[in-house]
Image 1 (cartoon, helix red, strand yellow):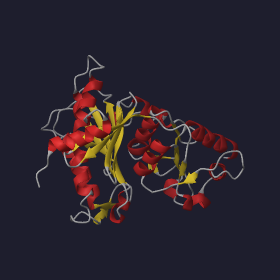
Image 2: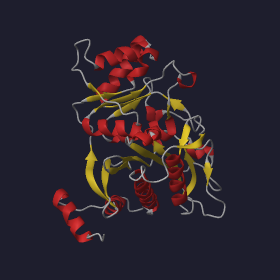
Image 3: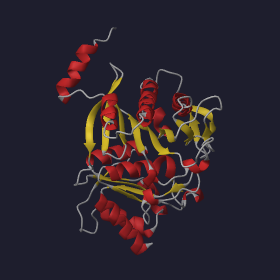
Image 4: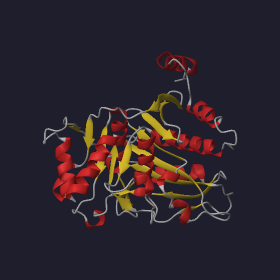
Length: 350
């Protein structure tokens, strides 16, 4: 069936009042920087294109041969899903040849991903988790892509591990794509957080959530409470405080999906705190489960840009110096008062 583009765009305009595509928005932001070369703009375009392609598969997961395990484990010891591999390759292939990047790194690979020798090199670094929450694919639960962009630190030659191990406060841009009832791309270049919703009839992202701010009045706390018995005393007491058990605060509702992007996205729009503390259940997770460079730093950057905060419980996430590509850390991210309270409980009881 032919798509009536004029009709579809008119319908979007009737809801938004002003039609702003992601291309138009990024270009408008670029004009605020007279010395900008447009390279970062094009990287963001490439990520948006990758999101469209991945979304086209996630919405057809029950029909296409991309459900289930690929029959191997990644560097994290996690079972690789077929859609994991697909998303990883799409992001790589759309960025390996452009001359904009010096190096890449993916949560699915043990080491850095060099730019192929026959392609030109650029001055940016792209880190990404191609499909966060992929264990939820087979049960049709929201999943996502997370990305982080830095300027390379080394001069000349091919990009190195040093270029990838940068503090979150040095991020040039970060964001995520959530594949759910609709596909949304949310990102920041340090000028606030902005959300774009994909219109599948046109194949374009339109500005739907400009200048996102975490609501001052939180609604939810998000944590896998099934692991509570393995938490420290401080985290247990913090959770009881969120539940209002000590009568000093209004209780929050528990909402937990098990996909970082989905849980973070809900709290970004509705207010609340997401946390994944260290626990004693798994010896590999005594320092946390989530990866600093692929997950925690990008989400911390977005949270702070939206008026929130992020901590390990003792240290600001964006101030942490990564020591390894797959370094894991605890995280508490969301409304500033809720994140501050987590630090207080951990300082007092741990």
